[in-house]
Image 1 (cartoon, rainbow, N blue to C red):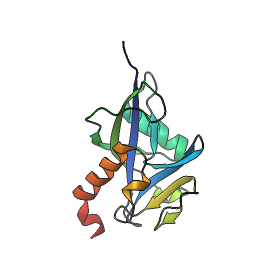
Image 2: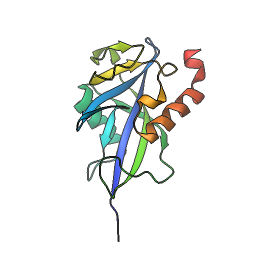
Image 3: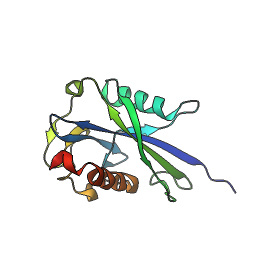
Image 4: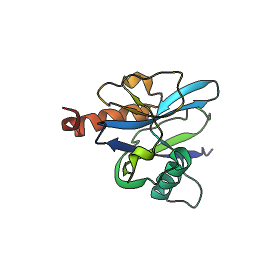
Length: 150
């Protein structure tokens, strides 16, 4: 028996001026999920192209995938589709004009808000992130770039 794979590609966008990361608050079904921006890899598309497309679709701006930052290393079943295994890939990304991203600056996460939002990594509760891979990547970001918010 073969099981399908669901390849997801996300990006971490740091705003130096605000000293915050960009997150996406999305309604899926009847629930609102806080996650990193990005989405599903389409057939015939490379992972970098996926970041660029998702940036344009979700934010309306050009996003540059700069460096592969991490990916899932263990089995991760899909939360949304039974029988699918998720492979999540994360890039550090850049944007020439982060001010063009229409996202409020938040110090705390409002679980009723949907859309992009800038949040301080050290203030976000990992429990607000629903995807296990997002929680791991956020902790990795905090360890690796600790000096950004010191």
